[in-house]
Amino acid sequence: MLLDVQNITTFYGSSQALFGVDLAVAEGEVVALMGRNGMGKSTTIKSICNLMPPKSGRITFAGRSTEKLPPHKVARLGLGLVPEGRRCFANLTVFENLVAAARPGAWTLSRINELFPRLDERHAQMARSLSGGEQQMLAIGRALMTNPRLLILDEATEGLAPVIRQDIWRAIRSLKEDGLSILVVDKTLSELLPVADRCVILENGRSVWAGTPDALNADLQDRYLGI
Amino acid sequence: MTLSRETVINLVLALALLIVPVVASQMGQPFTVTLATRIAVLALAATGLNIALGLGGLVSFGHAAFFGIGGYAAGILASHVFSGEPMPFGFEGSNQMPVIWIFAVMACGLAGLAIGAISLRTSGVYFIMITLAFAQMIYYFAVSWPAYGGEDGLSILVRNQFPGINTMLPLSFFLLSYGVLIVCIGLFALLRNARFGTALQAARQNEVRVASVGISPYGIRLTAFVLSAMMTGLAGALYADLNKFVSPSMLSWHMSGELIVLIILGGTGRLFGPVAGAMLYVIFEFALGGITERWQFFLGLILLGVVLFARGGLIGLLAGKARHG
Image (cartoon, each protein chain N blue to C red):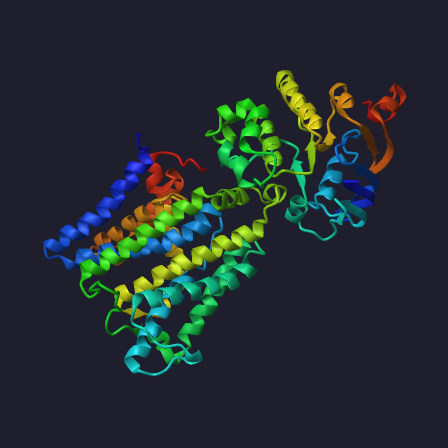
């Protein structure tokens, strides 16, 4: 397993957010992390990146325990996070956003520009002046420039225009074809299920179901994901 | 190639600072040359602080520590040449500026490393206070250290020397200081445009985001703080030679405040912000200081105006908003 999360519990101060989450991503696999709002998806991701270190349980990435590693060291193991809400460096240009964190590997500036031609057109523009969709592309591009072994996408298409969503999903599918491992949180099931190899559902801070997208029938969707 | 407005303004400032003292020297007005040297040296100190403050957003209220350590490096090394007494730890005194500069920069680098390593574990107002506390510690140490003048300070009897240049001539010393300033501004530009500078500015904006792309915010800030301390220390050594005198006042919190004021007046994070700020400050000090002893009151009004109406400082006012906000 590339990423192996075993029975983690996480607290915000004294309030417990995760009560036992299990999750695994194999090399080249796309795993969808699902659940209604407030069930612990983002907290799980923060725990994996050690931005919110778990109190108990075990996380290994590429065979190494991430326990007590500061977030930047976890990232250096090969974890590329695209955080929720298009977090670019607003006071830097598109180009600077991409090169600031670049690490050598297959992903280079020209390949990012191929994936997202709109970024190429705007390379000298300040990130803060980009549209929401372009900022999202930039956030994904920035994560890819670190040449991660696992890309984590937290609500990457939330609040974007449908046309832009299509662009982002197209990019995600092409990353999957390239064999990149991806852990993805998203609410658009119609796009998410075809691209996912496996799904993990969280409810009230616990992982309650795991299986293939085919096995995620209407009943389960209604029970765990319906509003 | 068309030059941006800011580039033109920078060139004008650089040329003005060079030409005015040269002309003044021809006209037999060495005092103007001294004023220009003061501008160059203060601008250099502020350029050092600008690495931490302008790029990294680290409001160090203790940079006088490095300015003063640089100054004392010049004063102490020179004093041993005159007294002939050996220095502790087997060092030898020197009245050669290159030796003094290396010494000053190394000492400030080490001090910056120690102060930064502790201070950077905090942020915001705590960072301001802890840097201030360190500077005050060094200030009181200098005050109570009789070997090198204590509260009375330490005179440099003859200005230290630089190979091939007669530093006793005001214009030569100015040109030397100016050269060092321009080289350091060049270094600042290189740092700012390098990946290091980009990451530093990114860390200022959001620590978590920087960490999640694999950069240690602490490491990059510490590096910036040390480089910043070194450059300000170099300016301190020149300042001591300019005045031929070092005293604990170089280490006092007024000095730290002055450096911050220079940067705010000129434009935070701007390449020539410290130069513009130092010009404004020194010219004000001279022009208003002749009229009233309370010139700092009027400087305060101007500072208030800048903070309220021209957040980008003088450079921001003339060249427009900063590319990096």
